[in-house]
Amino acid sequence: MIPRVFGSNEAWVLHREDLYTTQDGHCNIYLLLDAYSKVCLGHILTVDLPEISDVSNLLNNAKTETGGWPRQVFIAKNDPYVTALKSITKGLNVKTTDVPYKDLKKMIRPFSESFDYEFKGGKHLPPLSTSEREEMEASIPQTYNPCPCASGKKFKYCCQKSFYDITEAMCQAEAGNLGVALHFMKEAELKVGLTAEVLCRYGICWSYFDHKESIEYLEKAIQKNPNHPRTNYILGIEAVENKNYLMAIQYYQNAIKHYPKEDKFHLNETLNNLGSVYYRLMQYQEAKATWEKALVLLPNDEIIKRNLIECIYENPIIPEQIREISPFIKRYLTAL
Image 1 (cartoon, rainbow, N blue to C red):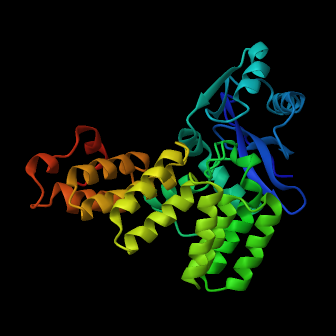
Image 2: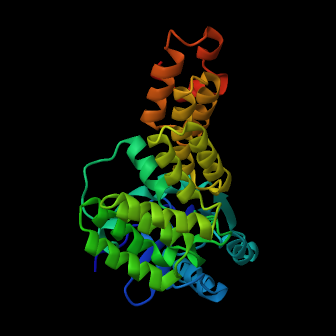
Image 3: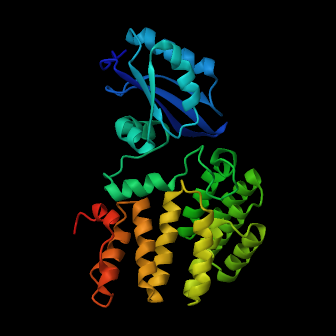
């Protein structure tokens, strides 16, 4: 056995990863890590949140192995187990510190990348740029965040059970494999029903092969739920292609209104498109404000930066007062 080398026992991290198994579907795996060495001190695999007794045993076993309690345990601020962990550590003279998820990811990134490779069928990929990593992480819904379909449920209890099949369907459709894509969509439908999200995804699959069939599915989706964000977004794109810009604005605004605030990826994407419509209509102040909102959501988005720089800030046809960079946005534009 390879001996473990621990840090100074100053801090541990209780970190949750999503794991998909063919037997149980989407599961939670809570990992207890030494914050300095990144050594895993133990884990709990569960379909739902773990029992308090299981986490207490996990902490006690780690104490035995490392020779004492840490000064504090870190956990992500939005993790559903924050309150329970604080109740466990309260009587142990151990401080529980909840930190923003993005800061926690920085602390454990080497372990997470290794975990992804070993347990999620990952591959060694070329290093990602900051913007690529930010976009990738923002595009995957967090398990206990509101579902991007705007059902009002947590993602885990709504669309997550169909997430794998829908993702595969989108990839297969884009690759030109309609039959395989529809097979995965049928699997998604069997798991969650013919929801607005599923109908919309059928529409996206068909968009690569049959425009009429695609629109029929999108119309069914919007009838099922007029406020379904993704369907409104796709119909906004359709309206732009038909040069119906005022209708596109309505669709995009409705999508933005109903996407959960936690879904920064799709909000950013929709705001970018909305800004482009405003620009086409020569509503430059609205375009500027919309693109700036999008940049705040994903500060490393190079497309948004380029739109702002080339179309607004450095565009001589724009009135000078509009071309001025908003004070709160300057820090995102270090290249200037």
